[in-house]
Length: 102
Image (cartoon, rainbow, N blue to C red):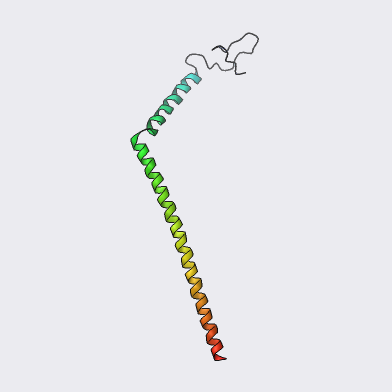
């Protein structure tokens, strides 16, 4: 039980609240106004054309970055495979040369 019943906090038979959130000018009500003002600012920013354009641009950049990372990893793998292939060819060449000498 929060203590708030019928828009009142003081009820007979119950311990009075330590902090009355319904009291005019109370810290809670003033803080609630500040939070509401901040939430309104956030809502205003989040619906602004500039914010939406920047958010879309960020998503596009994220997508491009993901594609770049994928392609870079693919190039690294291909390069590694080419080096392995070259090494194997060199080893085979050496083996054939040694076999030809025998």
